[in-house]
Length: 80
Image 1 (cartoon, rainbow, N blue to C red):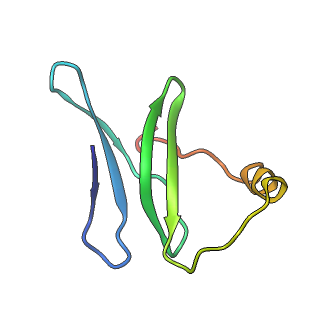
Image 2: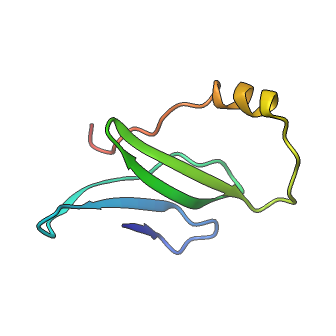
Image 3: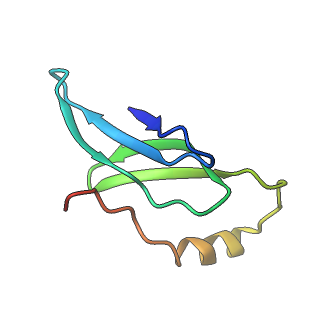
């Protein structure tokens, strides 16, 4: 479940929900200024988070995307 704090820009909080409806630990993924949550997918070893920019669209080559992805760090669950 995704929620935000209502600030400008908003800080997004991802909260897990168990199969029985129980609330699981929440995480606050790192975001850069001007980014908004596009999607989040639970993976076996963490989360995959897609951030969308509020800036004008830019074209990015596949090589540039791979280079950028190599510099990113995964989000760490809060409280760990």
